[in-house]
Every structure is written in structure tokens, then in C-alpha cells.
Image 1 (tube, rainbow, N blue to C red):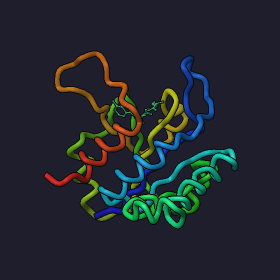
Image 2 (cartoon, helix red, strand yellow):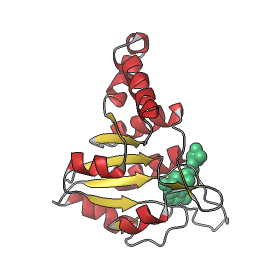
Image 3 (cartoon, rainbow, N blue to C red):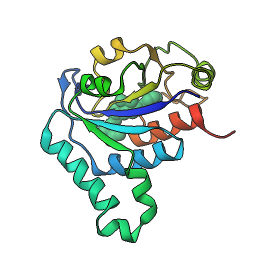
Image 4 (cartoon, helix red, strand yellow):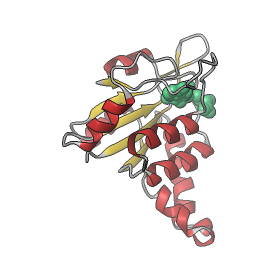
Length: 182
Ligand code: SAM
């Protein structure tokens, strides 16, 4: 099976009026998405943020839960947070990972492949796949365009006209569709 990475992008992401902005890292996103990534066998979970203090915050959270007081209290959590990494940009992450295939996600994406095709593609041989998720109002257009594949939007079978999931839910649901046990 192919190696899978997941990245939560905080820049460039869109704001309410479609401008490129930088979002703030949310503590919950560090823990919740790390647990989903660990559950489904992602190799690493990258938080992308251009501001050093924000990346330091992530490292502080992880150290607290991998070596600090909370590690003693909830040892299990350190296994999830041990796969957390930070990068100042997508470019820096790609240079660390080498040759990868990039798949992007969005609530209103025009997919380039079906869920079944995506699941099958991960079972074969090939370069690692990096799944990108956005914050704020979603991944910037430049990020969407530069990807090799766009996954289908997650949505109900009946069109309710609403499918703006939290990024934490979107990560968990996507990982389960791609790598979940039947
Ligand atoms: N502030 C919000 C939060 O805390 O969740 C951030 C929302 S952010 C735009 C949601 C991200 O989750 C999107 O960039 C996308 O990666 C993913 N996402 C949300 N809804 C989705 C859907 N229906 N299908 C696929 N991905 C979705």
C-alpha cells in the first residue's frame, strides 16, 4: 500500500470573500486530526503555518503530551501526537517528503476521481500521497489547481444543500473512506 500523509493548511487559505489569508492554529485540530491519522495509519500529520510562533505552539502541545505531565496521565495520546510535524509552507513539506502525489479536498470540489478509484489507487504501488485539508473558508485556488487529484466532496446521499463539515470531521470521514476497515 502507498504511504499516506495528511496536511492541515493554514496558508494560503480563503477568507469569507475569497481572499488568501492565514488562519490561526486551533489546539483541537492538533489532537483530533492526529488521532484520526494514527487510527488510519497515516505516516505523519503536517500542520502548515508560516508563523514560527504558531509552529512552536504545536511543538509545545506535542511535547506536553509526549513527554510532559499529560503523557503520564494519558499515555495513549502520545502515540497519536508523535506523528505530528510542522512546516512553514507546503513547499517546505514537499521538499522534506520528496516526490509525492497531492490530493486536495473541498466541500464544493469537482472531483477528478471517485472514492472507489481513490481507495484502489492507495492499495497499489506508487509514490506517497499527501491529502491536503484547508482551514478558514478552504484551500486557496492555487493549492487546488496545483494538486494531482481532487477528491469528491463529502455529502449526504440526499442533497440537503449543506455540507460544510468541520475540518476535523472531514479528515476523519475521508480517512475512513480511503483506509477504513469494511
Ligand atoms: N473553521 C472551520 C473548522 O474549524 O472546521 C474550517 C472549515 S474548512 C473550510 C473545512 C475543510 O474541511 C475544507 O478546507 C476541506 O478540506 C474540508 N471539508 C469541509 N467540508 C467538506 C466536505 N463536505 N467535503 C470534503 N472536504 C470538506
